[in-house]
Length: 462
Image (spheres, rainbow, N blue to C red):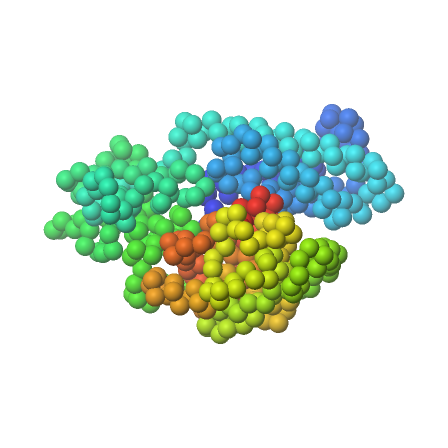
């Protein structure tokens, strides 16, 4: 988990998973058997170990899906209250469905007990986030990075190296985690073990595209010494990927693709992904069928035009395919024949469209694209050929994102808002290439869970 989220958040998740399991296990036995609190909780006599594991897992997954382990949410009291409450609301029916059978014959008792457990969990979350806010205010989690290989930049443009860029462009989107420290004229002296300890340096960032040319006095290599002594040493490319969850497009070239690991999952991984796509899309189609029927009826009653919107998109290896969506705009939305990006407050959106676009209901028919094999549940969003031609001409390596099947959701979608410009497309490409390089079952599941947060909070919707 820590590969795709800050290590602090990964540890917090593991701690709360273990705490949830311990508390639920203690409260799920015969009243009075483990804790004095158990009789007051009205605990049913259940098979404690599997029950505690199921409930703790449900709470942990609900917390991820609602965004409780994103740093910017932990630092916002209002968002913590809202997200924790939503996570508890989401966990309640899931717990009844998944583990309610363990309370056979005492459904009402079980439901009341479960509500009390969720209230107790909610209190633990508020306490832990309060402690986390104090820790962040004391800067306990801020890592100091020594930047070598380039002088500190003066104010103003161009801003394309970490030392030149404002923090929000190179820091993680989920909160300030790094402080840049510049060594002055004598970089070698700043890299000695004593200097690193004295300045509380967590890692070394080698700025510029040529890391091999940085800080190489005759007779020694302080960068290698620092790395072998246990201090993390990053090039800009590795720092962006490992710590920011994206690819640095400014130093992206042919050699990066040739030298980088990843990109090619095995046939077994691809078979598993396709199987999960089929199973999940069938389940989702069955579960959302009533919603889809209501949506179809509402669209037909509101405005003339087709029920489904069919549009050509670019798929795997640049092969075009027809994507299906519920029509959310007027039938004459592109009467001039020129494709247009959706804008905020777009006048072409119908009243029903204003409801189904933010909640992504309009994209449910794309599950049929997944069944057909045109798309996957997770992957880069498919673009229209007109925009792909424009973006490929303006952004180097843009066409490489088509090396993997497009998806209904993806790493860029859960980390970056809706894109409606070349610069937005460039930013999203940095996430798409990260996914292309690091894709796997774990990352796909993490993205699917994070998509729940994106839908509930309408992040990036237009």
